Length: 343
Image 1: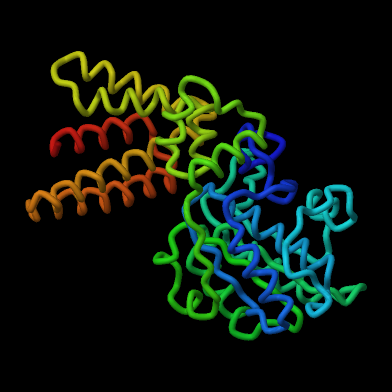
Image 2 (image 1 turned 45 degrees about the vertical axis):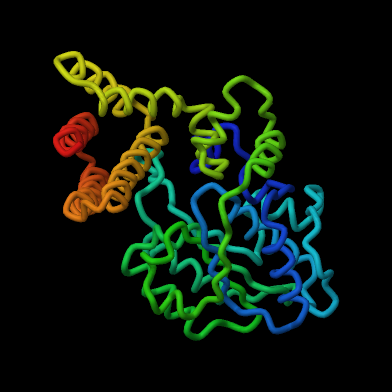
């Protein structure tokens, strides 16, 4: 992630600045036509895996609404926004009085992105709605993602959703809707986005300046699972090498494996390794759940349950490690040891 744009991967375009979206044409049409009907829901829950364009869609729709504040006069399609327009420039710079982007804040002392969206951030929404709009335009809040709301923040958002201000619109992003408060989900209109297919992935990566005609393009696309963010981690953060090293550790035996484990743990615990550590954590969890599914399909329900419990344990331990800033190398070694004991 760049120092200038915390939370934005190297090689990516910040969602507020991105003028193109690939692979979600049906969702764009649904949002545009729902808005034009004048009967659009005040809160839309945009669901889907991380890195497939949820935030870009949210900003794209927000620009559409702010450029066409009267629903019945709005186009029935979301066109590519003009980067030079006043609305686009204001949103890109974070200077819009009509849109609030709630996401994990940056810790002023460490310069790192905090682990959660706190209630203090949500209180900004109260002040935001309390201000008088000089244009009478819509007020839009993008929660990116709602998965990062801590308990107090989630309850504070819920109170606003229960009594939404006039001409307000909430675009609530989530990678895992099942983790949200049921009461938040019930007050939102769900809009499910699917992972991008290979064609859309190639278009999105070409838009970012990557040549997907290279020798490892197919390998990257297969490993990315329809997520542009995962592809960027594979390309720009050494994700392919990390995945290969992880597989070698799990499959290996003997003293040499211990050296491989320490080498992998050193890479993942190095300075400014947050992105690749998160990649490893996701990789670890996905492989454990893959083992659980394989065991279940083979009829070994006991083994499947053990891997499912292991996945829950790993998620808890990773959260504790992050929350208490524990030694990452020891965390990685401990997790790898536990996984190897059960493979």
